[in-house]
Structures are given as structure tokens and as C-alpha cells.
Length: 286
Image (cartoon, rainbow, N blue to C red):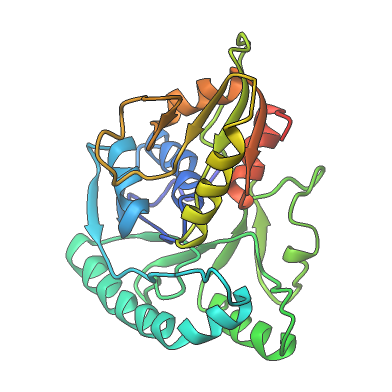
């Protein structure tokens, strides 16, 4: 990708803390800005902030409000999201106030917001990073997309993490009302020749309680599995995250996870869009 904001000196990256995918796809964005000689700061919350602090321990970070998205073990996703909507709106309002304070104090030139709707300022160039410009809602799709469009139009430009020739987003980015630019797949991984060591790699992530339910289901089924496997639990905040025990690890740094994916014959995951970009980048079966 080429951010094409080389005249800017201070960049603020603000990924959503909804699973880990928003943070992981910001890794190549941050690296590119650093390569261009920009000063990069990070503002986020929860596991997303923990992950990026581990990846870039030398960068200045800011803790801002969390959306605290929760999935239900029994309610349909749309209903659970509607129940949490007032909480999300409060978070957006509070994060906007926090961002304005950071911009004023740090003299930020550009904000790149990965799906954080309140991370913009009248004093900066504002870029929204997102792969879902059209929400395929089962209920009130017109109303939902009108609100979504209004939120994104507060930004100067939308970066779509997709490849025009081999698109993964499909109709999710078919919105002509938004000024957008495809920036290619955003993956922190790189492909290189590697020997296969595992038959199966399980990558677990996402908001609770679905993350835990998925992990419990996988562990139960793996009791009868005869092949060699490894599980990455997607828990950056858990203790001993750098240790691998009993065919599993709570969390792994990018380089180690990159190696593990390449060493695995098959990937098992309930992927978000960022995982799809990783798999496409590495050409792995899943």
C-alpha cells in the first residue's frame, strides 16, 4: 500500500477493539508510515491496544474508550447489536472528545481510523479504513445504511483494504456515495518457503462470548483428532502469552504466527475479514 500522505509528519492510528483483526491489519499501515519517515502514534483500547503495543513498543500510545462489543450465546447477532447501540453511540461521542484532546496536545496531521466512527477532527486529514461500506442488514437496511453513510462521510477519504483484481469484499464496498480508494490487501504476513510441521492450525479470535464458545467446541472435537495440531487462542492480555504449552498459545507475535501459518497444512478459523486477507496473502487452505 502507499498512503500518499508523505507531507504529513504526525499520524494517529486508531483501530477498533472488536476482536483483533482491526489492529492486525493496521500493522502494515503503521510500518509504511514509519518507512516514509512519519511520526506514528496509536490510540485504541483493550486487546487491540495490547497487540499493537507488543508490535511497536517504541511508539507513543493513548488509551481511549472501548466499544466493548459483546456477542450473545443465544440471541441473533443483529438483535444483540441493536441492544448495545446506545452504548456504542456513547463510546463514539466519548472517543471523539478524547481524539480532539490528543490532536490538540500532539499536533496530529492525519488520523487513520479503522472503523472508529468518532476518531476524526476538523484540524486534521481524516481517513476511514474499512471493508464494509454497505451493511447487509436483515432489518431496516435503508435506515441502517443511511446512518452508516452519514458517519463515514465525516471523513475525508475511505481506504478499502481490498484488491481490485481479486476482490474479497464483493458488494460490501459497492457504495458510490463514499469517496474511496482501494489500497490492496492489508496483511502483516509475508510468504516464504517453509516446511510443513502441523496438519492443522486453529486460530481463535473475536468478541466474547462467541470466542470462548468456539474454543470449547474446537477443543472437544480435537480430542479425537489424530493429526498434529496447534491452537492460537487470541488472548493478548492473558498471562504467559509468549509461551507455547500443550499445543497451544494464548497469543503470538506477528513473525511467529506468520511462521506457524506457513508451517501448517490447513487453517481452521471462524475468520473475520482480516484473517481472509492473511490467508489470501499466504495462499493457505482453510
